[in-house]
Length: 83
Image (cartoon, rainbow, N blue to C red; front, side):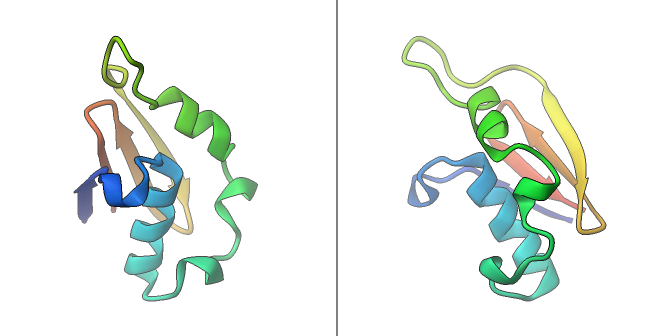
């Protein structure tokens, strides 16, 4: 399992973190992932759900979906795990 907390180096984008973690697990360049993430889940919606707001952090809870044979879990506390 690979788990990471969103970093400012990745502009805080959940979708970027998901793509990077799955690419790392696959040992490929993120641009070479097939299918692209947008064919599996709406990246804009995923980022919007877990976006921080000026008055609060992210949401409580988590979302799990499957991508390229991996179970991806995004948590409101900023963690992304790929199993």
